Length: 560
Image (spheres, rainbow, N blue to C red):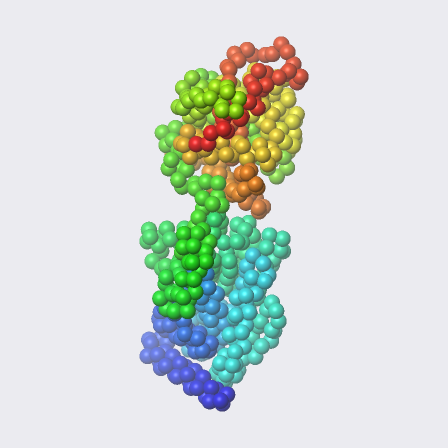
């Protein structure tokens, strides 16, 4: 039986090689059109593996092959339904190219072909995933394909004569120089230093932005490597989501004539695989067709509202004021400032917000059933007027005069100042400045409160931001929008937990500062026109501060 299989595989290989050589002889100057070369390499991938790819897998496979041949350095994205064959496609394609590309590159007829020259010493492939175990899933598939009986028959053929020089749990290498290695892309891994001609990112939605952009991307620089990112939809945005949107946008706008994003939901896979169709129908019943899990895993829906604090595109549309530019000096309107103090590695950000307490947009009264007291719910429109960022200055003594100078540019009625790590700044402001200062300590509960309030104000359209043509070009606006759009959310009991992504270079200074300011606008303040104070506020609390707790209860009693 083995002899029969060996003869069949060798016959298929001979047919493939004969057709390829005859084609080459017919082409002027011996150059094979790229499309024809891609088709023949794809056919080889199916022959060596003994597997037939479905049409949607074929489209993805051929695009990867073309990108590698043309050395276009493209970023190819694939969003496949769970278990629909994305890893299998990569395994068959990569294994085939590891075998055939060096063989073609060393044939006399392709000696000077620029598409193959780079592969004379092999195809070098790196497979990355959020964990070592995940990267080894695709790696093990590639390994099993090139170690299968069908592949061994072809590799032992006189046209190839390939052997394994390395074969272990992480790396498999062939005698033609090709190798594939599995590498963890966890945040704690140290992976810099390798160079690859093809980079595969599996479960790309779970690899951190910092790791993929700082550590993985540079590994393809020396060879202008193709980067293939594969994954599925989830609840938060990241590098994978951004790459998909770029590829879609470029293709739709005709910036590129070649498709670089491939997306297939469960219906496409079910069309070609009856067993898959049966299984997914059962999953519908088990999970619920409208459940988040089914929608993400099989329908490829990104449920951003579940994992992200805000949909930034909707925010710009609904909360932006395109007619308003940043204002860096205003002594007429009343303002509340939110200050998020930064230390080493973080910036101190001041967000200046305008509020008119004489013009509430909502004012409703009702009787508290428990206390019998009348309570008034009031809401105001607020507008971001400006930002001030003090970066790379961990010394609060140096920051303080800059903060005071900036606050002096506006008619400030209230400042809500972060006092979590350093309370001295807020205390000095209370003692020396002619406005109310509220030290705010971030705890799980208090941060939940101000972000629930901010979320309510954003959803109601009352929290507005200047978005004029000049403003949107400034670094402060871009950083504000970037940090706001990156915020992730979850729940700890009844508390809303909002934070930046758990990765290096991620910050939430601008959103925290804004949340403090918007919260500070929620209860009325009084303008103090005096320039100095005759008493020391280190030990004295204002009337507003004494009623702060009661007011907080009122403004959070009703969620809108």
